[in-house]
Amino acid sequence: MVAELGGEIHEYSRVTELDTSGDGVVARTDVVLVGAPRAVLATNVFPSLLERDRLKSAPVYD
Image 1: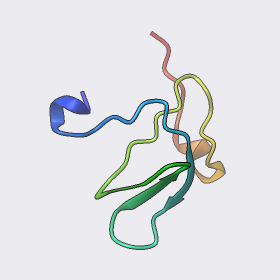
Image 2: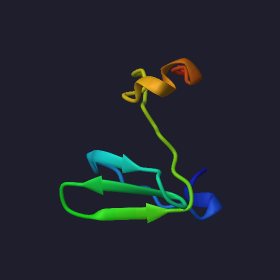
Image 3: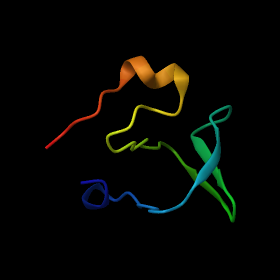
């Protein structure tokens, strides 16, 4: 669905830091910085790694 709406998916890209201090989001990986107006945090079946978001998300099994 993300790709259908024009978003890019960066699979297997380990994000080491998220910066939301400016406009949009900047994700730092071991290789590159990726900037976007918005980001989707996909955690699969695991709880969010961001403690502040743990109560705002729930794993969905299908």
